[in-house]
Image 1 (cartoon, rainbow, N blue to C red):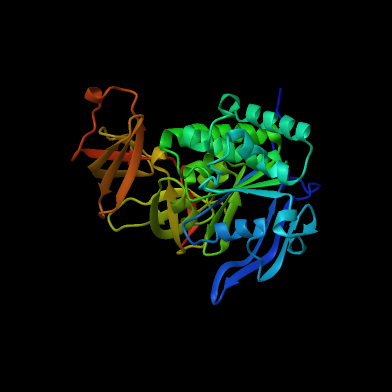
Image 2 (image 1 turned 30 degrees about the vertical axis):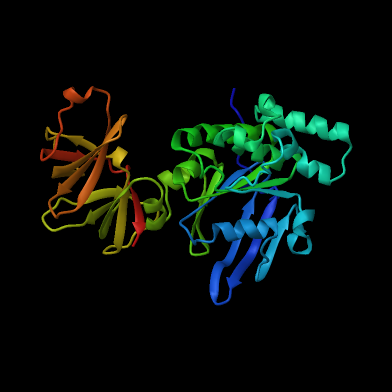
Amino acid sequence: MNQKVFAPWDDPNQKPLIQFQNVTKKFGTFTAIDDLSLDIYEREFFALLGPSGCGKTTMMRMLAGFETPTSGTIRLSGQDLGQTAPNKRAVNMMFQSYALFPHLSVWENIAFGLKRESKDKDAIAARVEEMLRLTRLGKFAKRKPHQISGGQRQRVALARSLAKSPKLLLLDEPLGALDKKLREETQFELMDIQEKTGTTFVIVTHDQEEAMTVASRVAVMDEGRLVQVATPADIYEAPNSVYVADFIGDVNIIEGNATPDGDRVRIDWAEGQPAIWGTAQKPVASGERISFAIRPEKVTISKEKPEDRRNLLEGEVIDIAYLGNISTFHVKVGNGQIIKAQSANTRRLANRDITWEDRVWLTFTETAGVLLEG
């Protein structure tokens, strides 16, 4: 049975839950957000991704009501948020520090926001129990935050944030305090909880792996602007700029001059080196300076020279990064450029045949890379 793909952004009849319309935010003479427009849809797990200072936290703080746009409009369910006080918004925020009350039990921490709304005791108890079940914290209900692990504290903060049934939950680097293995486990828990509750999540992170794992769509930001907004697969496989290609994952970028030939493009990139051939996604002018971006896992490395073909480069292995399941080979080719190739470690260490200073051949198909401007 074909499952319906979740892609409300492709449906012209879907109305966005959140709309940024020409939003600018200035702090004195510094522009943190620059004329930004963006739609986020209900039930999305949306990631704002970028380096420190790119504006992602400012966007989140404006959604929460802690900052006001200098110009432009932010709407939630069609309503202008500028007219709504932070505590009156159907928005909750979960901070990196979790901000739990140390003197209150897990149960009381989750109940805190509900009690402030003066709900009756039975309704509060029922909702807290529901949140404890959702986050698998039932047996820790009576403990204080210092008596549970970092991952469990993270889940308490999540349960407290979701208890009031917000339309939108903002997560500011929520997994930053966890170690790598726990962070990976918690990413899947977050996705599971988001799917079960149907709440729209917007996560701010500088961790590209995290964004690619959890998000339905990712907005890559730079200096207050959106560089690309797309699904993780599109961001990785079809970046729209050198900045995005370079920011997400590992990539080789080779610059050269283009000569179109049908739907293929020849790239002359170094004297004495064979041309590289790529596939154009859009028209390329003859002589145009372009960048060819190719992921290391799409480059095949071998000690035997393959049959003559396009995209065949010779070089010397100058470095090997062994990462357990894969190895990345840093290969210096004729003009001194380093090209990375990756291979899966299907054999044990002693049986692998490529080592430092070996002469090797690198090959890749004409559709393996992406042509980018500049």
